[in-house]
Length: 89
Length: 89
Image 1 (cartoon, rainbow over the protein chains, first blue to last red):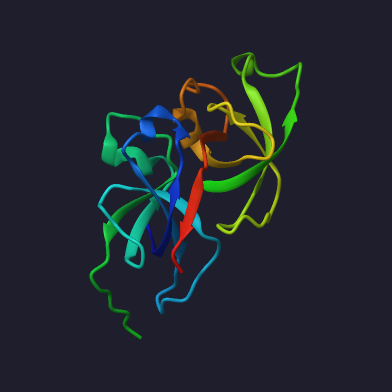
Image 2 (image 1 turned 180 degrees about the vertical axis):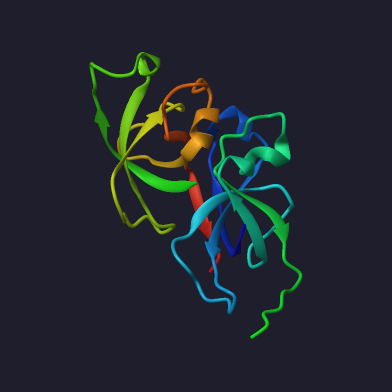
């Protein structure tokens, strides 16, 4: 899993029927000190995350597991909203 | 998932039999503001997308979970046509 910041939302009317009523969010992966790492991507949301929140997300087929047994064609999915985290130096 | 712009189509007569009657599209990833970046990729179309549209592409094994793609040898599928991207930052 990776940590990221939610930076926006994506709207699509025509989409795979399995996506119906699933929220699509833009997430920007971040490092431990909160700086951006790599490119933003679109992730499905299973926990009710919103713009500005720090979240963690899974990549790959596991992104669809929250909707099991529906096979949602997603390769990135938000599975948790971060309250806080600490980094030991 | 990636945001991408459809830049062309791909035609192949000889291909895996499970790809017969699938439309192949040439896409280029875009950032949330619409600027193209990175490498071109070939994706199977499952939502009747066309050249010039911004789409949502799922990659990896999740692409096989798109409608009608079960057991087909694909690693990228177009699963949505983007209406808008709300970037809040």
